[in-house]
Amino acid sequence: MNRVPMEGKVLNENARVAAELRERFREHRVFVVNLISSPGSGKTTLLEKTLENLPRDARVAVLTGDLQTENDANRLKRYGYPVKQIVTGGTCHLDARMIEKHIAAWDLAHLDILIIENVGNLVCPSSYDLGESAKIVLLSVTEGEDKPLKYPSIFFKSELMVLTKTDLLPYVPFDAELAVANARRVHPEMQVVKVASLAGDGLREWMDWIEKRKQAFLAEFAEPAIPG
Amino acid sequence: MHEMGIASSILEGVEKELRLRPGSRAITIGVRIGQLAGVDPDALNFAFEALTLETPLAGLKLEVEYVAPRSVCRGCRLEFAVRDYELLCPGCGSLCTDRVGGDELLFTYLEIEEPDSAEPNSANTEAVEAQTK
Image 1 (cartoon, chains in turn purple, blue):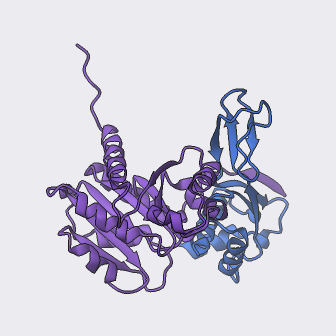
Image 2 (cartoon, each protein chain N blue to C red):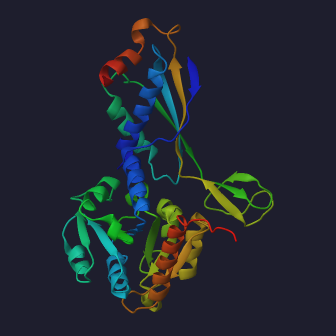
Image 3 (cartoon, rainbow over the protein chains, first blue to last red):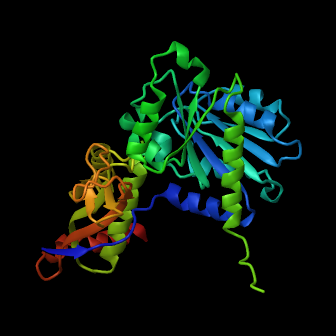
């Protein structure tokens, strides 16, 4: 019997397709975010407010995933941007293949931002790379402050935690500082934005974060300045 | 449940390695999985067994090393396993530590029986090759 060392990542089909997608998004300079949370944390409402607050000429498209119904796409289409519903038919997450299929009809050259609203689930979506530039996790104040510790994988992989429904803080026993501290135990560099989408609080900070992060993405392609 | 895809990717890796070692028989494949990778070792083992059943690789053992996230201290450079998301450096007590792993999904080793030690007809490389042709 002989033990031979083996190296390399265990790649799966999803990782391969996601890498191809990422390459295409980079080629066309499309900044892509993947929004992940439990069902009912306010992804669609935040997205509605986001579309409402974008400049008129924004080149944005949205993919929204659910197990059934076109309800979310219908809510989001009212803002005049291209929106596609991904009905997974029971699958608890979006995978790279679904993204590839649903953007097929769009010309990426005419897009600056693609927002992907994942299926409401804190577990499985964390394992599926969609070729995005950034993962963003939402946590609403009607959930437990210890969610980052119970579901560490998604908090580890997300750059930003959006604490939603903060206008309900006076009515619920939720310690926002503890929630942030828990998220940072899992992911010390976690950035945090607090919003109340319906009341409008924090939306400016949220929009600023998206714009700044998009600029950081674009800066990766900037030509180095020629001295003199 | 994406463990099926990962199990099948592990098997592809084994088959690739076996093609480089004609006549060898695979006994155990070792992988390292970070606790933050979002992969459940039990579900992975189940998928692995289901996929190898009644194939030339039936009986191949999957050994999962399930590892805690690790951090490095910016002060004293000590690298340590993170338990319960405690960030303090156990060496110098500094809070300035950087996470350096935890979501890995890597091959580590393949245990094989080589042609001279194995019965000639027990080698599973030919069978694997025949199947992939």
